[in-house]
Length: 414
Image 1 (cartoon, helix red, strand yellow):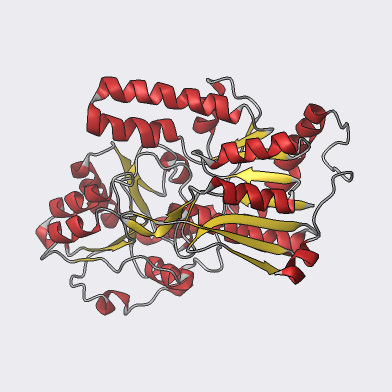
Image 2 (image 1 turned 180 degrees about the vertical axis):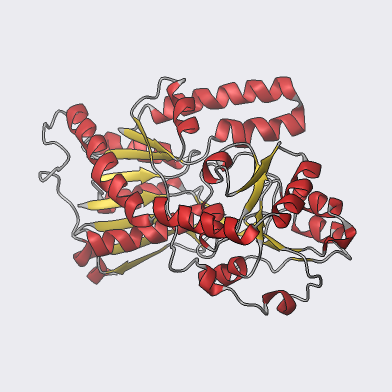
């Protein structure tokens, strides 16, 4: 079969949950299945690269302002043309905004196409409500949130199956009568992200003084991630605590936070494209910190835990699922005083033992192989069975009667 991943926003390397997922899925499909994988992502220009059974289609898109490593597709016709050219059996849509309807419209032309949606962010709450509340106040924000859930209801009912990354998000969809759903736990590369990658000279390399804990955050430096709260938290730490902090990432708040952190032992190394370097940075730190209130899964948290780091975060979103009792400390959203207190408390505890427990937790419960075995072994068959019933084909989850362009012939024509 030809499987297709479709994403509207994407960073080609380094951090980012979508890019990590696409890379790991590619490796799994090519290693463990006979299928072809078409991945459609934004890029600097229109370009299709075929490497064996992997078809990587970039659609020219402008960088996201304030987050130059990310691009955002607006040219839906280019996406429709690629889908019509390859006619995938399954389309997995990973973003909520415009491209889900591109997939839905493609299915109208090719009714036996199976549509699966990854509801990876509870966007009416995380994006619409929280931004609207800050800009327009509570009443307008609630109205916008209600409209957004209405859009989600209309959109995701069109899909044959939907997966979320947490039970909370699945329940939110259930309240909108979206019931063909599953939860898909994500994974982490425990060979790449390991305490063995620790470099004792990393702190000195960054020019950070102090003999207390080295805190690290890895992710977008923007309002959604509440990155500014980490600077506020750091300022509350005791002067003799000896802490330093690494803010690894890029985003709209970068310049402002660098100015606010002037004179403090805080490093801003920027967006790290090299996964091995990201692993070294995490393993060479002592505590992972995040103020993100709407974490949908938390791959960065898992990667930190795989490097044997205890976590200090907030009791909201998926964070309580990622940081159960004994693996870190969580406090109220936006309470930077409580966060600073938790940093001090965790460092005064047996933080090394807590870190090793976090590593063991990841080893026991999260792997990419487990993720994709569940996706392809359970979610895809359910979706394809529904698609067969919807299309009246009665062919279960395999559609041998659908004609496809041969990827090898297309490769030769490039």
